[in-house]
Image: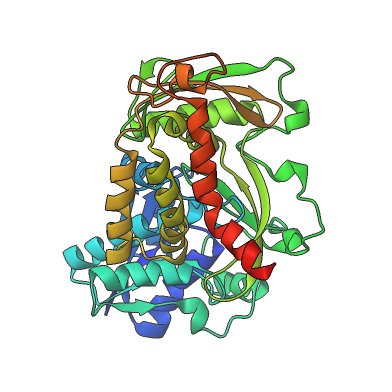
Length: 395
């Protein structure tokens, strides 16, 4: 039996690699996707081979992640529930897709992942895999093995000479990629407990951010960011640049309790500096470039699109349908937004567009020739007609 394992080199996936060999007598191919973790990858191949992997793939997927996953999602304006910009959710379909491709190329019988049986990631990985390879076999060790927790994993690792760190764990779990860092579990499971300040990685404490604000301009074409401060950049560099700018001013911290797809509520703390700047700036340009009714209809579709991403249905016909509609809506979103970054805030201070629908002569209180204010009388009466009829009937 041959298995492709999503491998990070940490305690869980190191134990899983050896466990798959022992439990299934499997040949294990380890796969590590670099989607912007900024983690040290030196020595990871040697570590995987020392644990028993027959082959190791370590791939830089950052450019593809930014271009083909993050940017389409931001173009669609996706936000889940109370402000989650879907950083973890959007990375999973790319990782799972590449696992399936590696399995095909190597004639593997199955893929395996380290997601627990309580979270959303198990759904995201497996739904993606089934969508791309309907008959693929999936092994989820956390749903099969007898280990109860970290102590059991450490004992297994020691017994099998698996090279893993055995220092005390951080009091929370962390997942990082190009779009964000998420923190869950441990001390954060108490929704009244404030997140520890030393937890944050991408952003400074807003209270300790520079005392002078900084302005940034972001140019958009068809809903996609194409330049920062006038410099044309590819999606990957736009994300890296905006992460640095936003993080320097403490922008993009979110603390919320969300509804997991599997049915439970979960408290998550997120750092999304670059994504927050992109989202705010795109909205600013959108405000002056989209027709009112298109904007209204688009707003009804965004929650459904966000649910598709959050629940793991990136490779689904409904997400494809919604993407086409939202891309069509985003087509006119070409222009520039200016943001002021200061003490955790990103405030829109200007927006402009070559084909802006904002006409200052119409919006002005001064006299102009197109809009006759007297016409408002009939407009109001017609819109109030049903209410007047109802009031008379209830008389």
